[in-house]
Image (tube, rainbow, N blue to C red; front, side):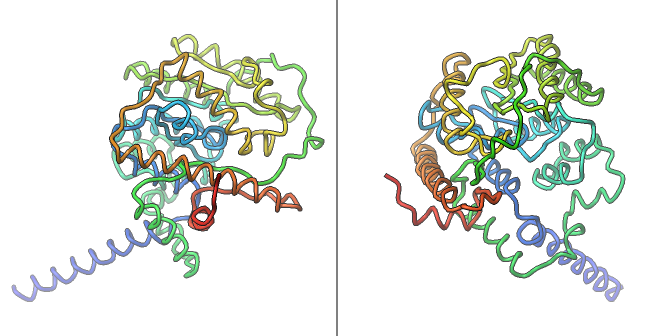
Length: 375
C-alpha cells in the first residue's frame, strides 16, 4: 500500500513538473514575440477600472491613434486592443475580455474586420487566442470558430512551437516580457508604426467614394451578433472607419465601409467614417501615411488630436480621476511616446532603401528610448 502511494505521488509530481514546465516555457520563451503579445500584456497590466476608452479592431487602432498623446492633450485614458488584419468575429469576445478588467465609458470599434471576405486564417486566430487569458470567454471564442484541427494548440501554444526552439530567440522573448512585467505597465500603450515611406505613384486614387457594396453573409451575421451583444449589455459604443487612402484596388472595401452604416444606424449607434464621410483633408495629407492603410508618426499625432477632440467635445469623454501613482505612470508614457516619435523619425531618415521596418514596445526599442533625449 505504501509503495502504491509513493508511486502515485511520484507520478503526480512528474506530471505537475511537466505541466509547470510547459506553462512557464510557453509564457516566457516559446510564444512568438510580436507587437500583439506586447499589446495584450500591456492591457492586462493596466490598473483595474482605470481606462476611459478601449479601442478594438485591426491594425488601424494602434497605428493611427496614440493613447499617451490623447491623455496628454485631453486627460482621458485609453488603450488599443487590436491585432493585424483582425476579423470582426473576435470583437465581441475582446469586449467580454475587457469587461473582466475594465469598465470603459466608451468602446471604439474600427470596422475593418467586417469589410473583407469570410476567411479566417490561423495567424488571425493565434494573434488573439494566444494572447488572451484562459477563461470561459476564451473557450467560447474558440468554440465559435470551430477549430477542429489541433484546437489544443490554441490553449497550449507549446505544442505548436516546441520544434522551433532557438536559444537566442527564447532569451530575447523572455527579456521582452520580463521587461514589461518588471515595470508593471506599458510605456507606449500598444503603439506601433512603420519607419518607411509610402510610394504614392505606385497606386491610383479612387474617384467615386460613394459606392456601396453589401457585406458578406458571415460578416453581416457577425456584425449583427456584436450589435445585439452591445445593446443587451447597454454598452456605449462608437463605430469608426479610420483614415486611409482609397485606391482602385480597395474599391470593394470602400463600398462595404459605406454600406455598413445602414446596419449600424438601425441599432442607434453612431458611425464615423473618416474615409468617405468626414473630411480630414485639413488635418491629414498623403505624406502622413506610411502606406495607404496606416498613418505614420506625424499622421498619428495629427489624427489623435483631431479624433480625441471629437471624443472630448461630442462624446463627453473628459479628464479621468487617477491617483498620483497612476498619473505618474501616464505622464511617463507621454515622455516615452515623444521619444518614440523622435526615434521613428530618425529611423525613417536612416532608411534610405525604404525597406519595410516597424517599431513597437520590444526590448530593443525600449533600450534605445532609454538613452534618447527629447526636448
